[in-house]
Image (tube, rainbow, N blue to C red):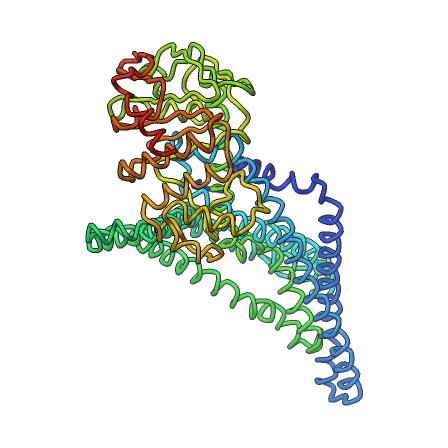
Length: 590
């Protein structure tokens, strides 16, 4: 990260290549070819401008009015075609950028969300900060900068070869007498431009190299700060109840201090770089005139020839000084490419972690949930949460998982869902379309209440009246008027109301297999009882697996799985003395 290295460019190529061999490659190559053609046209027009300089300034020197107006007419035509080329070059470049970004964003989202990698990156890999920023911002910057820098390099190379011969011819030879020897340097302005550019590139690299890690860190610090702002917005009620504004303000300012300090370092470094590049580019304006002035005053060239030399020198020098003029952009590109490549490497490391550690075999099943010889471990692969667990759950059956906090109850649910990779054994699991998992804090996507109730497997064509009646039956009558309102409902609704919504998904989507991880923890026991009894009545063939601490949950399940610690467990039917209320509750509900 401290310098431009082959590894970064190699990984950057792996990011660039897939789009250019994808199904969209035909459109991409047509757009790229058009952009290159327009860029070459701009270079050609600049060559014609160079020839125009000679005619125009010679006309001025000779007070030739007719030639002056002819030259203005030529300028108008050249400027017209230059403007057209510049406008459509930009337009087509942006078109290619957005098409490429759409494709690459889709690819990264697939990689990020495949096999629950987005979850595992957050839980098991702490090196990938802010994946949202890498996908939304870094991809955009990487594409735009890759196109801009590569097309800029192409233009610089073409410009160099277009003008170097012109500069060689118009500058002529330079005769020097050194210790009595006559030395002739043909095309001396070309050598002057080359030496000038090499010197400038070396100094720029020395001054600007620290910008690479600084820009990398700036991206990270900005994303961290934004993430913490979003966290406060998402948890505004909790912060307000704790009266934690002062603490949060202090925390945010400490995060911003990282931005401030790093940006200050960037400012200082860019100031040094700008001191040099500004002086370098300003000297480049007068340098060719100073060098060519003796020939002009010796009347070996006219004013037009002098201006042509200056303009040609400027084009050659600018082409040779590509790194000098683009160093800040190159440093930004390097930082962005580094963030994307580390993101992709971390995704690959998670895939490797999944394949190495996950010896749990998942098999599809239509009629039961079967767990055979299942062992679950912590990420150290040494500490057992559960050893050799065996049980079956069939339709109409209900299982309650109990045990002290932190003993592995939720981890067992995660393992059944395919989220926890550390363990071995075999799980036969119904298809995901037939299952519904309810975490303690339900996920409510941003959108309408209709969208939330249908999420994830509901019928999109469900009538609104059905949804309104469902809300009313869940004691959420006031929400039935807001069914089509878009809101951040996770902040508007209390946790208890959110858990009602989660049960609403059960009654609406009618899954055959229901997995609940403390899904009624925020509800009172009466509400919990009514929801479970409604579940018995409306989905009598569905199987239910619950995690919870309340003893009242024994009333609604037939089997109890107790986790005892150090991998031990016990499985037993719930005794009649524990569940004597069940028949009464069923009668009362009926």
